[in-house]
Image (cartoon, rainbow, N blue to C red; front, side):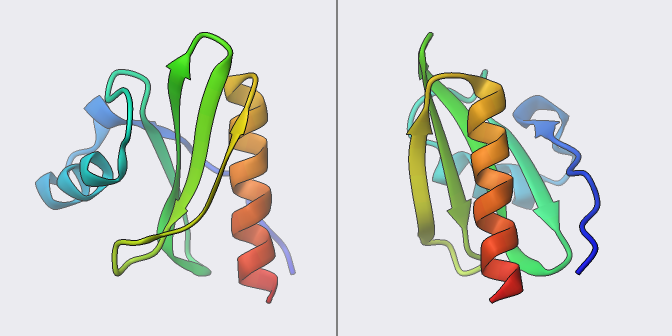
Length: 93
């Protein structure tokens, strides 16, 4: 299966009020650091956000709302890589 490189969007750049509200409701720490990405093969979205300077949360959120997977990484890039990997794992079944 061919995967495209994800495009991450900061919370402030989400144009749809409904999408912004959904992303916000899934955030646990910082809307200032919240970023989301989508993949057409996954009905929800992946997010990353910073809790502390060396603690980044990543999560997969289903279209219905609940978090289906989440974890922690020491850097933003590690959190994004792990979130995308988890989303691709779900897509590939």
